[in-house]
Length: 388
Image (cartoon, rainbow, N blue to C red; front, side, top):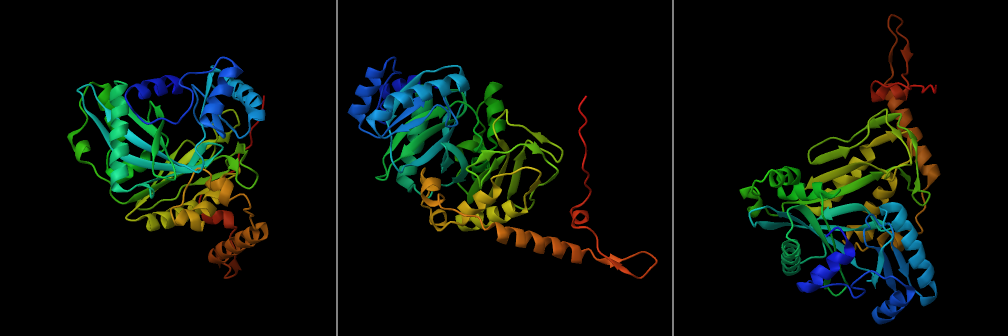
């Protein structure tokens, strides 16, 4: 199931709905040309061993097909050591919905509902939520049953995720199966109360899935934002450097899974994700508000992050209405402009307020002195790296 081509072949055999396209990888351009003509443009070139949006190219015109295939093969080779690619119909304006599954060694396979993962940049998810606003009870039930069928057809044992594309007519298609725990698994944990990693370890240890898992339901609403070391004001250009100050938001229903601290060095050699911010609330409206406030309370100094960009997404009327599609960023955020003057004025106001709040009498003098705003954030220091 880790190979997209092999998984498509397997799913076709058991009747899972597939996006029209090649049933095997191509070895020459004639195969790609014939498949593209049959599916109809636009089409999508994908790496068979791919993930994270790498090795993917949307092709809208036959004249661009060969160059796109060659570029996808090069990127796939660099990213995965495998340049195998294939072609499928590009579903325009879809939703990206995935379903969490668990399967043990005793014949038990269960799904734990869906995650909406349509807010993406360059085919990489940045905001996920559950439940999805796009699903009614009937569609949710059918997708859950299809995900279980996929895992059973693969004789799967583990925690895994079955991904689907949902078109504008409410029809869903199998996309791929991720044979691992997903980055966004915490939102499922928040709404179901199931610790997926614990269940993964139980399965690996030869135990059954916990009894309570089979009765789990969806409670409230959860959202996750991926905190990336990227410049959200400059086309998500990678940001690197040393983190000078780091403070996570805290409070009921707020969770941070982080890989950084206040003295971390952030390079460009690895995936740019720094941390995951997760919130849970009784309703979607409250979850959005809680996430916006948590993002504003998240302090990372020294590098650029995507924090401000995600606040703007969450505050956008289309997001609030639940109109979240995979082209959301291109459609709604392309003309986004940040009022840098307003940001600087706000920063100055916060700094002034912090300074005035920290005004105190000087010991033994009766005179009033103002502390530096840096003193209001607790202990801190700036270290110097010395290279030998």
